[in-house]
Length: 174
Ligand code: AR6
Image (cartoon, rainbow, N blue to C red; front, side, top):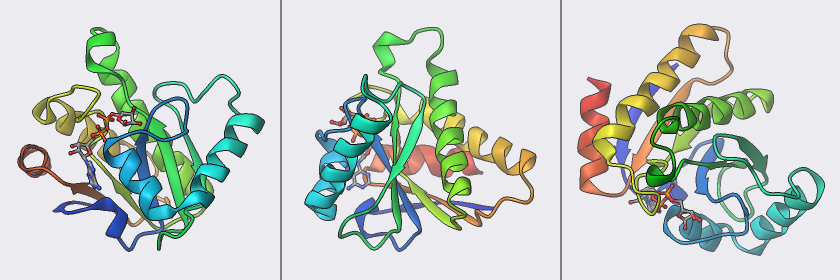
């Protein structure tokens, strides 16, 4: 499994799965969630509504992940996850952030996907410093790779829009 960090807009990535830093409603929002829904078009929202109805009537729990189609995006799937809000999880925030990454990889694996792109989950509206979140994210992926050497996933790419996140993920990867 190759882990990389690149600058850019995640909606433009040529990968099998794009991870959305969603909220538990799964019905859209700002930040990367808004960008993904705008780029994917109305089919993504329709898929999200169906997932809510059929699987998560009370919303997707923090730290969990679920896949939908990707609408107009080049990807095959969007994997939605809900990061912890920094201020609301003083004790278990790191575990929940690690769980987001692990669950996204498990969901991608269930779909036999080979490449997945993550944004800097929780590093925007949810208030995490990238310097704090990046080592947790990278470590969660490395642990998954070590525990699942037969994984179908070959490439895990962090796609980072802002300068702080780029620096933090590059340094966590070193
Ligand atoms: N490509 C890559 N990264 C992006 C993009 C993009 N197109 N747009 C923003 N980012 P955030 P969160 C970066 O706030 O903190 C939403 O309203 C951004 O610079 O999108 O998990 C949801 O609906 C930051 O580094 O996600 C939730 O309510 C990172 O993505 C809430 O925000 C995450 O910022 C989730 O908050």
